[in-house]
Length: 614
Ligand SMILES: [Zn+2]
Image 1: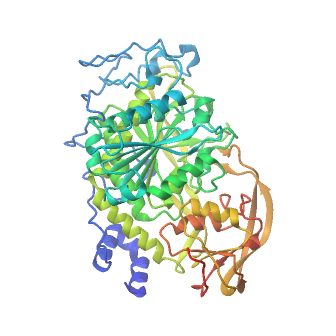
Image 2: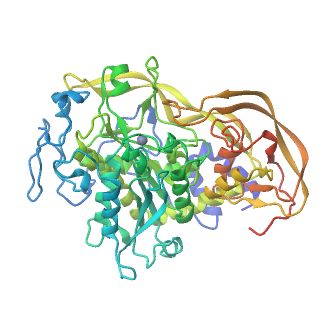
């Protein structure tokens, strides 16, 4: 494609809309984009900030997640559901915390009856007061392994890394490919979906749900037929140390789900390596959200939704990735939940500052798994169930919610495997082709608005509608942009940054001979030490950051042999932008991975340099 036509397309893409862009691109690119089928009943573009949770569409058959008869609860549900044939229901109580420990009473509890399907994992066994232990989890996964060389469905257990305690981080690969290594999965021609549970140790439902799903992906399982179209990798417990200690963070106090760009923890490094090697097309991240706590203190009301859902919302995520996430994953997921009598809304949270009444749709910085995987051009989604602070209350329902949502994502990928591969291939070429051109967003802010939100009255259990300030992450406002460089130069002292960038899956070249390039160097205009913050408040376990304002200065610079070059002509280039523009709180400079501002520069023209063999 010629530069001029491409520039034309880019400059007109906003006016034409994505459908028009898709049609135009299909006409002039070698791998045409698929026609974008709009979901019936779902407009291509809606105003999400006030969107109610989607309703199931009439005529849409919503398959039950694990083959059990779908029985939405009756209008006035009893906490004890009627028992379908063959399903054992244990009365709640034995393994539940006493009502006194819950931030709500019977009227609220009655709104969340157990589902009509019951899940069986070690941690969900009758009479248990603890969740599946790390040893039980490992045994469960070992028992599911298939013998090597067996034909058909193949389940392989891999140690993808180790937690800080030395506890293995386990991944289970379910595939019909003959081997479970990245090349075998790639050769299968089937896209891979990665499911991650329990990055936060005190959010157990995702982990228990993934154990249940692992069993259904095994030969004869209810999800196994999906392996005809997709490969699935499950990491049921990304933070085993946190799980063992019933704490959110890893052993050294770091919030694992803010560490996916910096990769300071072995847990985050293991997940990054897995994504780099297997290149999943979709990544699903299972969490739980706080039910009482600061919500009750601030709003005197309780969150009401079974699931809160969100895709990647950070600057520079390709528009087609966002569109695929919204139309092909978010919408069907909400429908699937609704079909099971489960409610959902957009993900939101609120800060720990009790005076701050704003709700925020979650972080927009490139540090969470959700956002970093979006910059890796994957459909990256967060699924949160209402679980923190309520012990084992409603645990079967929380697990059912996770299974329903995650199974929906597997189906979405299976049904659209070919289209998704085409989108990914287009986006890879498109991101690469943007090097040296146009603008790149360095920092952005959510759109401040208000919305009507349904919550639950803690005494009566009735719905309460609150109108609250709402920071929408779906519409980002760029607060700082710069011309997109051709790449970044890094000094020979930037070894530890280079190692992290390579773990993220970026190509980093080493300069073989002294040379000279046209660059923008950074000079600090202000420097201060600051706390690293997310929408909740200070990020736990993070050191103070160096907050700088910089003035880029254009000049030819000498580039010595042994220094590095990160070209932006690569599919995951936007990760390099996130890491290497120094004046953001997520950057490698701000977080001390680059010793000084003179260790990096923006390269503004294609460099004529000689590189070492890659
Ligand atoms: Zn979480």
